[in-house]
Length: 400
Image (tube, rainbow, N blue to C red):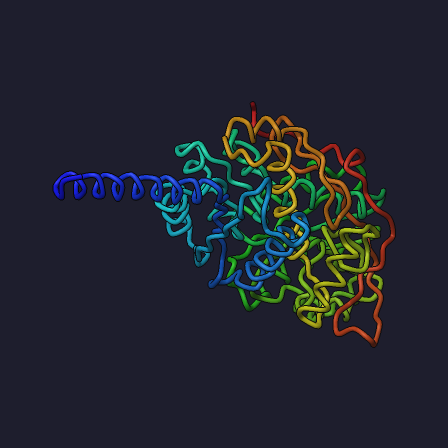
């Protein structure tokens, strides 16, 4: 062979090899499932965000049997910090779908951020699995078909608490934060009450530290009413609304009730033995293999029990893996939506089902009574009874 021909043949071989390598690299990236997690790494709900992140990674680990692969594809998680700011969350989600080529997104922590993110999922035609933002409007009037939610919604919170408190002869006033989470929560709670009477709604800014004026209005609304008198609190993040107890509510025969919360916030519950409410999760309540795995492995890793939002993050991770197992690793959005509508999957709370009409996960809630146990720095929610999904009649609010 003449030298020029040999050289040409060699260059041809190099080019062919390069194109094979490039194809191989592409095949490699196609073998990856990219999940974007947009959450409050910093900001007022940072504690919740951190738990969700831990739970999500543990859920992916649990559901893949520790391999972090589904149908031979590696799972890659891309983390983004929305700082609890709606505009930041919105642009980060667009970047995740657009630049990072995320197949699915999970998050965010705040309801305000979630509402800003919903249209982005619709624009990119990609799934956003909402965890743990709670506002009803997320699976209500602001919903679109790309939105699924493993987190509970305001109605599930409110209805389960109404089930726990709704008795003849009970008068209730509510104390909530003045934004989507608080207002949606009170609206759903009010709608769920059948026997008890709601006499006052108090809304305070999310950054409130002095509750005196609000508490006075609550006391005035309740003090002269006959029967059992309850202030029902819906609060998230900073500020301690339980300070209202310092105003000697007992003198007026007024009790406090609230839903569950993260363990540090439940330190305040220790002052209220016998307080009733309903919670989304407490590590000591559900008895099932998934929760046993979560509790044991969380203790092993962190020397502490898993918290409220850890369970939610884990549920999100499991839901994604279960859906991808069913599609054999296919991340096509239309296929995923079809697979996830009506899908049943096991979580630390037992079985959840994505309701086909609005993609809200139907799930149990837990009616509790607070017990003081010196072994724990928080008030321990003891199970009164499990409130099953079919008992709750959670309204479909998306006008689909």
